[in-house]
Image (cartoon, one colour):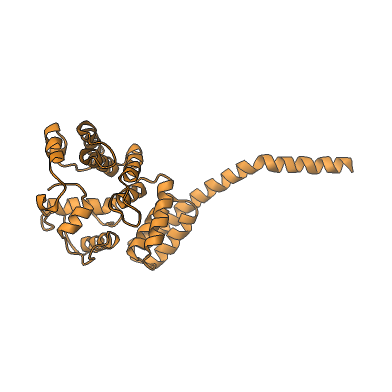
Length: 267
């Protein structure tokens, strides 16, 4: 009897000791399985089967896959394959950002910067841009340059702005040449952010169309080849962005769309 009790105690002790390892294995298993699910989801999305893609992204998101959570948030924002829901879009974007997924951090930074679904909070926007930038995400580095140049969420600092713009360029982001010199930064900081100081990009111009496609791709809306040719795919991506930004989603390139897509950038 005593031996039986001791045996049971020993078995229970072994189970308790092994639980963390079991949970760790389960986490690794879920992570591996989510990658397989994601591959199928991406394939369905690229085929235009948004409903099936959304179902797969939901499964991967439930396994704590941050990319799936981010893409699911984008699909809720655009109403692709699932009913459009700003609340669900914000929820899943927040989940992905909490896991420090850089594109989600940038999305949350823009939300706090413009008050889209959350109160305007420049300090909070800076926090998300900073975290994504620290994870070497070039677009976030660019926005850190904007925040430091404009004095949004932090005291205006030309040196810091220049450093972030140069880091973004070094990481492959197409930063404008005027933002890569001290003189250019000074001129940029001296100009108020106003649509009247901007020139509207021309989608019929290959260089301008490429810049727009790149930005839409970075934000998760454009998933085709970036070729500088403005066609149906580009318009569809723009409509998705316009809808998420609260603009008239007609697919037409306008100054409002440019200001939202390239915040704080004078052209």
